[in-house]
Image: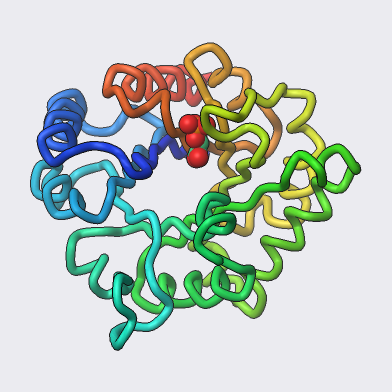
Length: 252
Ligand code: PGA
C-alpha cells in the first residue's frame, strides 16, 4: 500500500514563496520519494508551471491544480480547463473541495463532470467529500459522504474508478475554524468508504486539521491510505515531517 501525502496551498504563496518551497522539496527528495509514500503538491494556478519546472519532469512528486472546468475549451471567462492544466504540467485535479462547494457553486453534478474531464485527459481526479457539523450531529455523516461520492463517480467503469483518489474532509475539521477530528469520529465514515471503495480506487485520504501530533494516528485508521493537508504543510518543514511520519508508518 502506498500512502499519499499531499498539500493544497489554497490561495496562498507568491511565486518567490512557491519557488523556495519547491526547491527545498526537490533538494530533500533528490534521492527519490520516501519508501511507500506518494508525495503530491497542489499550488495556485499561477505557480503551476514554476513548480513543475523546479521539480522537473521526472519528479516523484505529483503536481496538481485546485480546480478545473469540465469543458476542454470555450467561452468560460475566468476558468481553466483540464487540457490547459495538463499543458502547464499538472497530473492531478482537485475536485469538489468544500470551500468550492460553499463559495463557488460546486455541486454534485459539476463534480461528476469534472471527474469525467480529468479521466478523459489522463489526469488523476482527487475528489473531496465531507459533511457539515449539522449533518454529523444528526448522525448522517456516512450516508452523506457516500451520496456525494456516488454522485460524482456515477457511471465510471472499474478501470476509471481505479484511477480516482478520494479525500474525506469533514467541513467541521477544516481550516482555522475547524477542530481536529478524533480517531474515534473517523472510524465509521472510513468504514463506510472502505466498504464502498476500498481496493477499487487509488486511495482514500483524510484531510482537515492534520498536524504533526495527529498524523500518525490518522494514518492508523483502517482504510486510510494517505493525508491531504493544508496549513501544516505550507511551511516546507511541516510537509517534510509529514513525509517522515508516513515513511515510518509505511515501514511497519
Ligand atoms: P487544513 O486544510 O489542513 O488547513 O485544515 C485542509 C483542507 O482544506 O484540505
